[in-house]
View 1 (cartoon, rainbow, N blue to C red):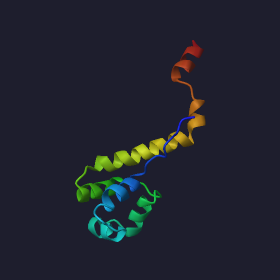
View 2 (cartoon, one colour):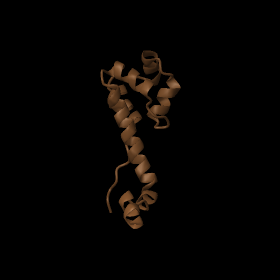
View 3 (cartoon, one colour):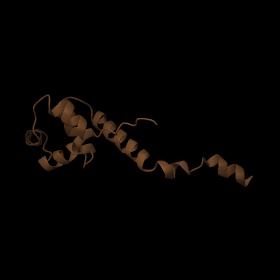
View 4 (cartoon, rainbow, N blue to C red):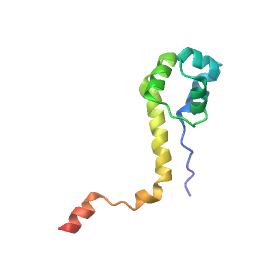
Length: 103
């Protein structure tokens, strides 16, 4: 059996790799970015996704790119969906099977 790691949410990276080293609270990051404290808290808890607006703001504060934040979020979303839809996706056949069956 494969040991599958849990997908990593952008909020985990935000908290562990950026907020903790700078000793930033949700409140302080909220003041710096203009993102509500509640919004930041929900991102950190993995209950909210990083949006384009949020990515732009975080990129400016932490001297990263917006793509950095969006790529983390997109990877999380994709990995999560792969797990959730694994059985349904297995049942889907490539288009070639349908095209060849009609010939």
